[in-house]
Image (cartoon, rainbow, N blue to C red):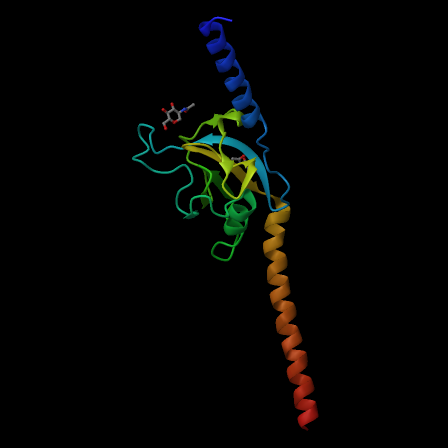
Length: 172
Ligand SMILES: *[C@@H]1O[C@H](CO)[C@@H](O)[C@H](O)[C@H]1NC(C)=O
Ligand SMILES: *[C@@H]1O[C@H](CO)[C@@H](O)[C@H](O)[C@H]1NC(C)=O
C-alpha cells in the first residue's frame, strides 16, 4: 500500500469511529415533567438579537467542567424555579442549563444531530451543542406536579392542625 492509500484508509477509519461516537449519543426523554422538543439554535450571534439568549428572562446555571451535569440535573433545576416550574429547559455545551418561560422567536429548530455534545455527567447523553440548545418542554403532568406539591403543603398544614388539636386535648 502506498503512503497515500494508507493515509486515506486512516482518515476513513478515524471518520467512521468519530461518526460512531456521535451516533452513540442518546436523546434523554424519560422525564414525565418535561418532554424533548428538539435541538434549537442559540441567538447570541444572530443579527437583531442584541446578544440575547434563546432562553432569556429565567435562570441559568453553568456546571463545573467535567462536573455532574446531565439532562435530569437541568430539568430538576428548571422544575423548581421560583415556585412554579419554568415552561422550558435547555441543555447546552455539555454543562449549561437554561430555564425560561419562552423561547426567542429568532431561534431556529435544527436537526437533532446538530446537538452533538455529550453531558459532562453522562457521556452517553446529548447535552446540546456549541451555541445549540437541547430543548425540553413542560408537560401537563409537570404542571400538575407543581399543583401536587402544593397539595402536599396543605396536607402538612392539615396534619399540623390535627397534631395541635391532640396536644391541646392531652393538655386539658
Ligand atoms: C411546548 O408544548 C406546547 C403544548 O404543550 C406547545 O404549544 C409549544 O409549541 C411547545 N413548545 C415548543 C418549543 O416545542
Ligand atoms: C444559528 O446561529 C448562528 C449564530 O450563532 C447563525 O450564524 C446561523 O445562521 C443560525 N442558524 C440558523 C439555521 O438559524
